[in-house]
Length: 93
Image (cartoon, rainbow, N blue to C red; front, side, top):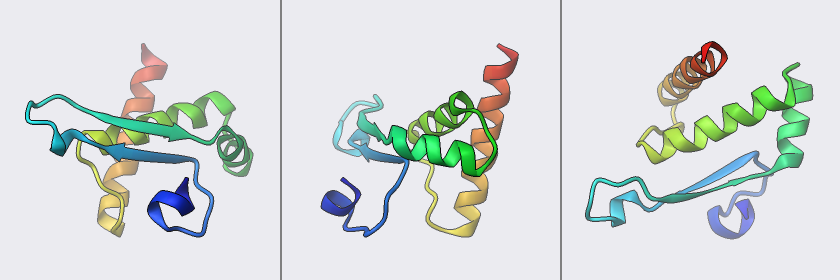
């Protein structure tokens, strides 16, 4: 999917297609595709549990649908900050 739709020659853990801007209401609309294989690899690579890494990519995709970007260094830092905040909320809940 990463090659076909985004023309990237790499594997990724998540791809988000945001349709919200096409939607005339203020509803969130989009598709999120998660590669379980990449989630497993990244969990091992970053010494995280599968569940924590899966939650992170789910949050990441949702943040994209809420308008967050991650192309620049500044955007990536803000995305990570938001992911961390949401993960803390999951652990406390």
